[in-house]
Length: 354
Image (cartoon, rainbow, N blue to C red; front, side):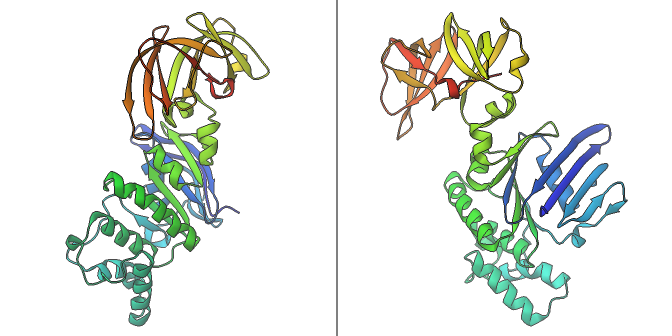
């Protein structure tokens, strides 16, 4: 049985349908990232799980128990769902100490004074803030405030913790450090976490399961490797990673392979998402990650000629910009490239044709 199950969930704001039939299952102890652009419905879905929004149809179950079921007219309030919630703003009370911020949920639940002190101290120790219980939020860094918010959400040992873009207020360096720290903490505690982000690199780094949303619909769900290496739709392939999207002519296809051309130069690619039903001669889209394209030493199979435009240095590698048949192709390489004509190799298994 999944720890958290979402069944045909719909939600409207007036006449606008925000969630359009979401079905998803999250296993116990997994870190799940809800990923998508602004307006995709990811935060609305998280708030629906928490009980902060009321859907119009469907069901939400935790350990098989319905916390929302439109057909059965069940809609438990947030405080009866026993979920931890970390807000994007952290939502710490500035006039309360770290200890009092973390203790607040336990006081509402009537926990005894002795048990409360022990639980709060254990939660703060768990997030590395055991010595800062007497400080106020204004005396903490952004990263420390984030940890207080997480400790507050974890202190009453919820079955599921919900995190709404908790890293968005941190600078780039702290965000990178916080990714591994948060994942390590959640996995150590063995709880289920649902994490909202619009940053696909963040989702790949943290998640066991990525749920990609677009326009209130679930586009693809799977492991980070599934979404990055085996996207099922053009949207998923373009959203994940850094890509070249090329306009190609589809000449023929068979057995999951496609022969396409760009500027009269032919390439083999891999068909995706029902492209087998498409007729030859039509315009197709080809997507290939920039790290999959290679600068070759001459003409050959699955290679096209391109003219060098410019480069940028990224520290451990270069990103080069080429033009082929009026289209831009970006390439990552560990060596410099200079002006003039070049040959670019696009491996057939990495060139996805839609």
